Image (cartoon, rainbow, N blue to C red; front, side, top):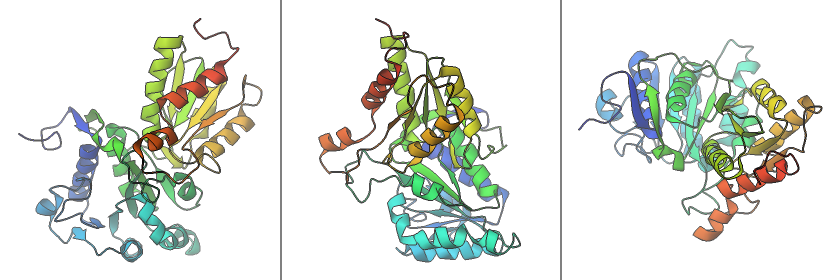
Length: 343
């Protein structure tokens, strides 16, 4: 039986993993300058099977296995990008990208400005982050905010299969370095993808994932999935109409869509998988407070990972994560006294 990625064109249901693979296959076929490089992306077909079958189809010159040296092959990818290639680098987990932090922050993100735009670095670095698999403190972190704070680097974090395909295509075609953040639990998420649409997403645009009038939840990546679940619970149990804004892009950041939503609902809760101190939610909350000062009927609330090195214990791991229960509780606290809660 053929997978969703291998069947004909049109609207198809596929997993997030399959949507990424489809985008890679399409861009590898479209542009001979595109190649994939990383640990076990070829013979092993990727740690998360995103690159399954691609080496058989495109050969080992374009699907390249590398040594276990993130600093080395990220640097090689930057060099290839500077001379006109379009490398897609797979890092086994965002935690391991710290080994190549100098390459990403001091080289990929800086070359375009330092050479006055005469040299560009069209490299894409794909990598998952997040917790929930008992991989403990060193393998369960979300450094989205660290990298999003770097000028010269674009940071994308789609939350569904359709956006995964469209935004990866946009990242590969972009002339600037892009960090493309995925998430371990989200790989198996299913959704509809229009495979007839070859137009990549516009980088830097958020989307309204759910419309509402009483409260805005702002999130990205897997936190958006959690927020949509929380919004359903709040609607069914408490009669609350929740709007969910999926940021999709952290740099550039679509503040306008967030502000327009909060101006309508007058309340906001910002949610992320990472630690909230100095994180994505801290930045979003500051932007909302400045732009919506007169419209806010309650302080902006934030929900994130407990600020501890994540423990191995499954029960403690779940307690530390920003699950539906914590999001719902934060929303209810923000709505207290509003008169919209169902008695």
